Length: 369
Ligand SMILES: *Cc1c(COP(=O)(O)O)cnc(C)c1O
Image (cartoon, rainbow, N blue to C red; front, side, top):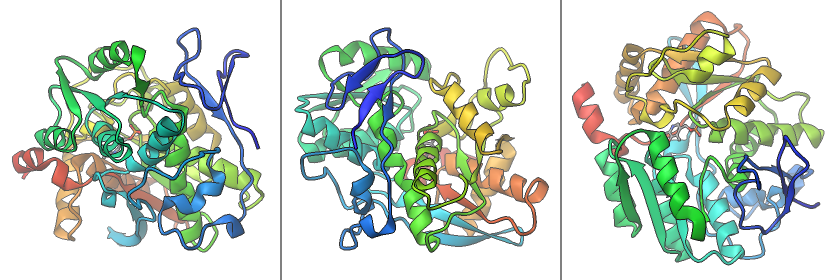
C-alpha cells in the first residue's frame, strides 16, 4: 500500500519521504493513503497508540515515542446522561496534540530532518517541542505573545527556542513560515502526516467500544486537526468493512470565535472576534476550513457554538467532579451538554473528549473562579 502527498484541487503529487509541506502553488497537501485494517493487526504487546502502527504509512525507524495514547474512556454524568469521554489531557505534554506529534516527528527523523520549526497557540508547539527533544532535533516554536505562561515555560523547559510574536495567531504563522524555509516545518495544520497520528483517536474509540463505534462523536473545532484526523480514522474503518458508517461528527466552537459555525449555518460573520477563554480553538481563519465543513456535513453532523458563561459553568462543573481541564476543553463539555439537551435522541450513543489539562492554564483559571 503506497502513500503519497496530493493536492486535492490539482493533479500535483509528491512522493512519501518528501520534505515539502505545501504544493508548488503554496496550497495545502493531503496524504493519499488508505490502509485496510483488521483488529488482528493490532500490536497487542504495545500499550500505546503505536499498537496501530499497521495503519501508519511506512516509517523505517523506531518510533519517537513516550508510550503515549490508549487514553481512558470514562463515563461522565452530564445532567443525568452518561457520556463517555476520552481523557486526552493525559498525554505526556498535556494535550491530545501528542497523537500527531509522535507520528510527525518520527517521519521528520526518518527523512533526515536537521531542525524543526512550528507555530501554534500553545499546545501544539509544546507538544512538538517535547517530541523534537526526544528525537534530538533542534526546535524553534513561534507563539502569539498572549499565550498562557505555563505553556511558554513548558516549551522552554524541554529545550526549544521560543519566539513570541505580537499580534494575532495568523501573524505567528507568517513568522514561522518565513523561518521554515530551511527547516522541517512541523505544522500541525499544514503537515498531512500529523493527521495520521490524530486518526488513532478513532481506532482507540473503536477498540475500547468492543470493536464498534458510537452514533455520535463531539469534538472541538479550531484548526480541525482532531476533527479531520478522527474523520479519516473512521473512514478507514468503514473502507475496511468494519463499520457501516462514520459516526455523526458534532463540532464545537466558542461563540466569541466561531467562523465555521457561521459558515455552516450560512450566517454572516461579525467583522471581528473577541477573545475567548477557549484559547485552543480561537482560530479566526482555519486553513482547512472547507475540509472541516465538508466532513461534518458528510456525516450528518453539525456545528454548535458555546458562550463564555457556558464555558465557565462547565469548567466549574468538571472541576467539582475532579476533572481539571483547560477552559478549551470545558467549551467542548458545554457543547456536549447543549447537544444532549437539544439535539440527541434518547438512545443515541455519544462519545466526546477532554483535550487539554488544566495544569496548562492556571492563571486563566485563577481569574475565572
Ligand atoms: C489544539 C487544541 C484543540 C483544538 O484542536 P484543533 O485541531 O485546532 O481543532 C482543542 N483543545 C485543546 C486543548 C487544544 O490544544
